[in-house]
Each structure stands twice: as C-alpha cells, then as structure tokens.
Image: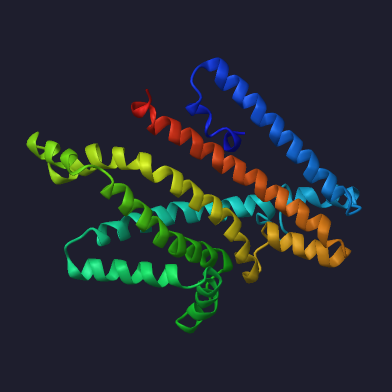
Length: 271
C-alpha cells in the first residue's frame, strides 16, 4: 500500500495523514472494482486460474526439480540486482575518475548497454557465448544480461547522486583531516543515498518486469508459464491476466521496500 501513499508525509498532522490515507484507499478500492468489472466482461474461467496459479507462484517445482514461476523470477531479480549494483558502482567510479582509460571504458560500457535493446543483449549473450567455449546455462545468461543492462543505468543514477552532494561537504571533510576514502564512505555516500534510492527503486521495479524477457531462453518464469498454459488451454486472457497480477503484487513488494528505505534515509531532512 506504500505505493499509493508516498505523498502522505506532505500532509501535516497525524489526523490529516490518517484521513488522507483513508481517502486514497477508497480511490484505490474503487479503481480496483472498476478494473475487476472490466475483466469480468471477458467471461474468465476462474477454475483454470485456480488450477495454474500455484505453478505461476512457484509453489511447484519443475520436472527437473528447479524453481519456476514467481520464485524463479524473484531469484533472477535478486541476483541481477546485486550484480547490477556492483557493476553500477564500478562504472560510476570510472565515470568520476581522472584516468582516461577508466573513464573511456566506463563511458563506452554505458553508451553500448543503454543504447541497445535488452532483448538483443540477451540473445547476443545466449547465442554468442557458445562461440567462445562451453555452452552457458540460461539462468546465468539471463542474470548477466539484466545486470549489465541495468548496471549501465545505475551508474548514471549513482553518478548523479554523488555529484548532488554540495562541494562544501568534501571541503569540510578535508578540513577535519579525513582521508579520501573516509570522506567517500562517511560523508558523500550517506548523503547521496537519499537521492539515489527513488530512481534506483524504479529501476528495480522495471527489472522485475523485464525479467520476463529471459523466457526466450526457456526458463520457466512467470511469462513463460503464462504463455505455455495459454497455448495449451486456448485461454490466453486468463493466464496473461494472472501473470499481470502476480507481477503487480511483486512490484508492490519492491515499492514497499523502496518507501521504507526512503523514510530511513530521509529522517535527517524532515521538519
């Protein structure tokens, strides 16, 4: 529910905040009912949805005993998020470096992965890496493609966050005798994090949805299962709608985590 109450902090007084939350909840409820009424006109087969939902949620394993559905999607996202943050930090260091080699590598990497479609990058890795040696598994290729793509965007977000910190903060740290790394870790990063969290959270929500592209490699994630069950039952609407709702629920989880982090790192700036 945090996604619908992000602006509550602007309403002064606890009574006003409670009233604002109630009104927003009423609006969400009304819109949800309208959306449900719209989908009801499709003559949905809820028995099929109930039958396939455990598979889409990942409560069942694949015949090979591996994760599928939402569980596999979350695994892909968590691995990709972790790796993309590492790549983004390294690329940011290169962008802010005075070394021409580091700057050139970082800018070339960012330009290529921001300037080409994620699907193309995924297929290049999945179909191109076998030309160089052993055939890679679908899961590592999917995670690597998402990480490289989103790491390029995160590097720009992180760079903007670092540069948003006033130069006076660095000068004050130097006056106190802090080393360069102490200045970065204790002064720059804590202040930059506040500006970085919202766009980074938006990127992770987008990654959750873009993870559906790894279905082209045969991974049994949400989109792959929805399309497979839709083809076998000739009930595409039910399966795609179910997949959409599952993605939405997972997105709300990410948005909740993002809102909690925003509150945590914004405490020092509240009135």
